[in-house]
Length: 451
Image (cartoon, rainbow, N blue to C red; front, side, top):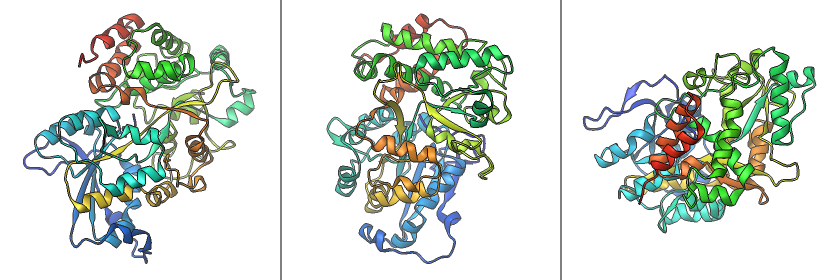
């Protein structure tokens, strides 16, 4: 899940009396620096006189600004004006808009489960040949599969993220002699050591994300299922070949509970265990910068939030203010296994200009343009990792491009929306709030759709 949430949500959607979404609107104007543009890379998309394409998604603030900049040259060369609107309520409201005929031309969907729901509603336009050709050239078969529903290819991947990073302060680790853990047992030992020293709680955690509150906790569970039970069990879990209350899932919950439900472990610099539910995920890791906690579990995209005002004051580097290591495996010699996420631009309007935009977004040109602006990565095989804005993001790109990496898409994003975007999120909140593991997994299992 990559919902970008901020209370800077300022406008309503401009659609025939529908005011259900609070939006941050961006247009290509912010990227217009008046410079010369080389249009050669954009000739293949054609030219359009006065065409307009609307896009909506969950991407907000600095990332939304950079998203808009990433297509500025495309706009100038093709004549297509793109209007992007971001909202934290996109996932909750996009089906309502689609059913009412008020959907944007393109929706950047962050969940394959939601994509499947929209396809089932009959609202999506299958991807054009140009989009599919790009995906076949620049993306792995696994990534293409996530945009394919019942044999119909609807959407190419866009950006990506690697989940399961543990953010930390390199200077604190050096000063206190902490070692990067190489196994989950070593991570437990490190956490217990920090807690015993008494300076602060080792972990800082934030689960708040508007209507999506709870999703950061699902990332913890997914990372532990993949590492403890393996990829095959993970696949069986997200497809419901095994029930949500299977013993392997119970074990993952209990293992994560040793951190999230333990008052000795959380919530450094913020408050007691309960504050995880009210603390926004964007700000939850910042106490590391003040020495008020040592560890924060969050995806590669969290790099953006270390400099919330868009400056470069906090350096993300092995010798910088903050860096991250991947949540370790059970055993040192286990293969590299990571969970991750991404987005998929789906189309609600059948038009040449809409498919031209989607073709560009699925290209290696777009991937390199956007990653060069900083803060994000992509699994596009045509992406040059040297364009990444930090050592961590470069490493993340190389992990995604490594054929030996065991990669699995975020589990909650693959599950039916009634589970992955509802009962699982809510279950995490109830569980952190005191509900038992068994009650939690039983309730989520009961919510799984029967058809």
